[in-house]
Picture 1 (cartoon, rainbow, N blue to C red):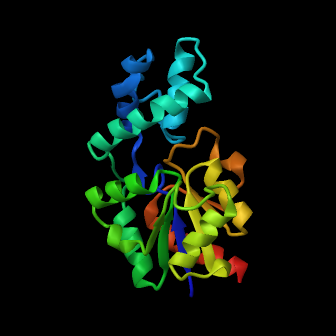
Picture 2: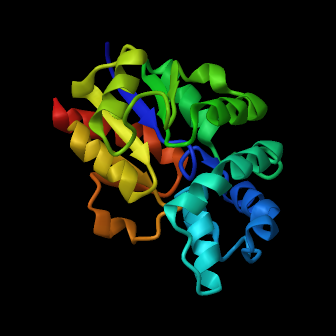
Length: 224
């Protein structure tokens, strides 16, 4: 039990946008969808493959209903696995910061809405998965973020403490998950949020991972 930092993955620890959009483009012709510009679609990528499909369809005035998503999603996942680490990389100073947290006694885990198998593949390819005691994905439980059980179970699996935990993310989904779980939230300013982070009213916003250890310490002090 003790100080606990639970991290989102895409847009928080790792910049995965380019490879997610590349996977969408790899299957676009098969489903009569347009190619997406990597820069323009960056923020959409943070919401995952389904959002990218619907975004691509909207570019040509089409809907992409659930039945089409169900057909297209497995090929998207296959395409994504094939390019999962071509451009993806940790955001600056992530690894050093997590090492500092570990040296200071923090328990750290990952709570992501990426499918668990793909999250493990990505972290294996990037290296450093050993730093995180637990990694829970979208399909690890019957529920996922923003449901509080997803956060609580991650805290439990790292043997952390809900009363000394912080959720670190980059979008409203992480903000809502933290609020639902009753833990403070710190949002990373260079992630995939469509909304201005200030409008989400997290307990903290950080611009540089070097500032995170001190920020987390202050946040759990307020909950003590």
